[in-house]
Length: 396
Ligand code: NAI
Image (cartoon, rainbow, N blue to C red; front, side, top):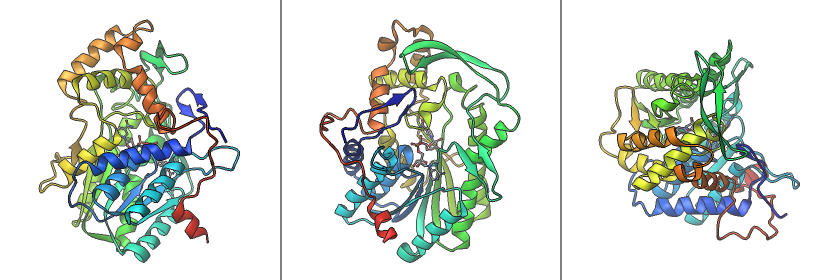
């Protein structure tokens, strides 16, 4: 099939298998250059197929030579439609891990469910014995809890409507957008989906099954961002969920003496999850421009390689009293934020290309789906039905 991008606002409904492979290969090459030494040896990554979770899996496997068990919720191709990018990324990741001789298995299923937790535990017991690191990198729109109740996550404010400039992704124009406050139950739903309850469930389940090494480390990912986006992010429904996630780190540390739980506060980056947040894409495009000019721009893989190398794999993990590790430090630097605010004030449809890195935004967006890589011939026929080696082996 000739695979072309089909973009609908903040989502692309196709993915290119060869391009996704290239994306994974580039991340692997970057990690290998970083000279990471030591680190975890057996890592469970929950949300391992795209964005920050994929970068964490790559850093573990190709930086630390760790065995990884990755959990994701992706769709294979049915021959007519392409698979989702996370499917192709995982196939490529496993292929590269096999070449390197590092163990990699994946589970495609609902990480919130008891069944997937049990499946993960049984694979760990059988193949790895125990794990010494658990990365929690889920970004999900909904969750069915243990009682069978479905909760939905929303991206709204928690008090009054918030009106700001926004980038209309269909037309690349600057518009004004209003985000409405959450209605009854929506805040609770967002906290249920994106808060820490399921992270705790995972740690409880892994502990009960005795599959965590002594002093195992667990890290969940969060975002704070600048005051500009507080109404929609940090003080919005998602921010409340992140506060709950942060609180959960403390609760895990209190509950289990031999588990170290941290929150890594990461930089704003274009991923499938973040592209859907209103107003935020314009902030991304301006932030990219400023950080690229100042030489501090990073992608997911640069962020996570730095998290491992400079923060997690050092004698004293530099965490604050809430167990937060800040790798959003460069994003929130005054020099960056002051310039972002100047650009924000002056950005219009007429000057958006000059004031923001809108091209860089779209480049990252297309790359996520395996498009716009110079060394891929997109006019060539490509096989869209790609197998993930460990899932194929399990099915036999
Ligand atoms: P993403 O959309 O790229 O990745 C989400 C991952 O979760 C994928 O592997 C997906 O397959 C998996 N997933 C979703 N629902 C699942 C389910 N029910 N069962 C199993 N797997 C499931 O998202 P991204 O941006 O990498 O987000 C990961 C974490 O990082 C989130 O907690 C997010 O809030 C946080 N973060 C993201 C930032 C950003 O700007 N992208 C900034 C700071 C933190």
